[in-house]
Image (cartoon, rainbow, N blue to C red; front, side, top):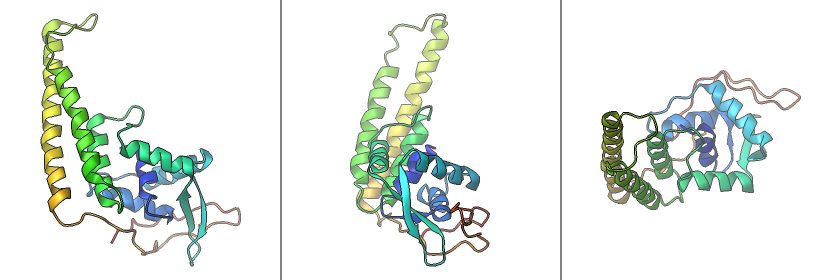
Length: 206
């Protein structure tokens, strides 16, 4: 999963604290993604250094809150609109993007699913061009099998996207709001302001 982009998208509804955002990754992807809590915190720190997020004060009990900057919101929107993170797998990006979009209030998940389907139709069309040129050094029969695998994955993606679009359009609302539950064993920020509530158990999203 594009952890940074998913964390940024989770901040679209409003400010959140680190452990809340960490828990959101699992819940907003339907339990599909389990990210190490240390990775979530490290990603938030890098996002702050990159000016994608900024301080939004703190909760009443002292947990530092983060919010999107204008640059961060643009990055979150770009990801939701189909810009895959560098090195990310297109299938994983599609599934995570649609699930997270469906969980966010105010986001048109139907349009996002439709745009993803168009991209997979284009991938399918490219994979089905078996008469196309073979990469230098590739054995033709193996190259044909590789394209067949790409085509099969594109068809599977389109089948899933059809189901997802139906669920978004006609099923119960999939939108989620951040939980107000606090980390049980979280440490509060030090005098230097460093977030250190990463040793608690993940909270859910209600």
